[in-house]
Length: 301
Length: 307
Image: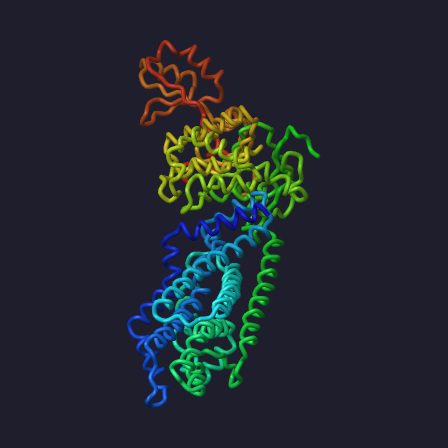
């Protein structure tokens, strides 16, 4: 157990000491932030306003809180995956030829591999948690309408989604052993994932075929979980204090991915959670199978 | 259990990669406290053998005993007995020297106080006390290598395996590393298994094994090998003219090269007899002893310096 702790500590420390790595892992969230500041916020504001009935106005704080929540739900959804790929110390150790040194040390291979997965989870969670705290600060400035339950729901979603992202990255890590392969996968994940999980633009704006396709991916459900908890409070506020009718609230919620649609069926919140949890379980089983294969493999090279 | 005197015992070791015979039926023994050198060009099978001994690679055939323990059954007992300095650095570039040393030591279950004492000891011996808190990627190649050696020694292994440890090292670092290794061999009776391209290092070994194409081509003490496979020479730079006639008359073969008159001998006794007979005709000369380079060239037909 002590050895596991030392190894996890080492893996976490390597990531935070490497400023370049830290910066690279935040590139996708930063791109999202820039997009939001330059034009996305205006697009979303216009879109919401266009959904309002004639004569009904929305307070500035509700509008800012809604778009801010949408932005941070996107950032968190993407970060769970992109950060976990940048914090894959197992692949880095393979590339740097450090692994043989661990194989000659008195450490079980299963403990070594577990340390990489736990280290990846911790580093990804720390980074995402910082983003989460920033989001709370931002929302408290522009308009804070989240309840304690929303915050707890967000935290729970964060833990599950980070676990999913870390396991996904760890599974892929078994198949990568060169710098070029790692760069290719990281670039692909960073550029593609934001689109397919619905972080860059609402899924409702995709074509029908694409909507059906992304509804098969667990990442989309993770995004919707974040969206739900960030938007729930502000939508209630709009309904109660800005006098926006229920039907309009539902349209806004649907158009901005506050609810998950599987083909044409609305997936309840519990179901959305369940899909992400099942993806974590499946990835965990795959990880254990691959790790077992690695432990029993003929050569350590 | 095999005899403890032979701290490493390899019997009929084989490792094949399809048609390539990386290690092809080799057997050797290393005595406790010995400095044992592996010589060979790249691809000769040295590193493969070392990786099998450490448990990094699985063998195809043969037996490996370390300190009497069979590597197939007792790898967990064997691992703490070994310390290895790999060809490439295994240090974490972004972490400090002290973090790298601590991280390694803790994996061996060494307590904090002992770890700090050993870091202090090795930092003084290898002259890196001033850079303990500096990140590895801010160190010179020589400094990194010294930390690599210290890292392998943190748990005071019974067998230290050095896979070309001083390649690319500056002379100062090389002297420091070898002084520490020799001190530890004396103090702890540490056995050292070395692969190297440096003849000066192989010359210091108690026993040398030369490998080529996965096979052991010759083995023995450096003196035995030189006696068996390398000739001694005398270079005569200044001499009286009668010497040439005498050599011709006595049918002693000689050649002129860019340094001077060169005569080949098969033993030191022959040199002694020659000098006793002809010294009065010679004004300036030099005796060149057969080198490990020559041994390697004569045995394999390959030049180590080309690697």
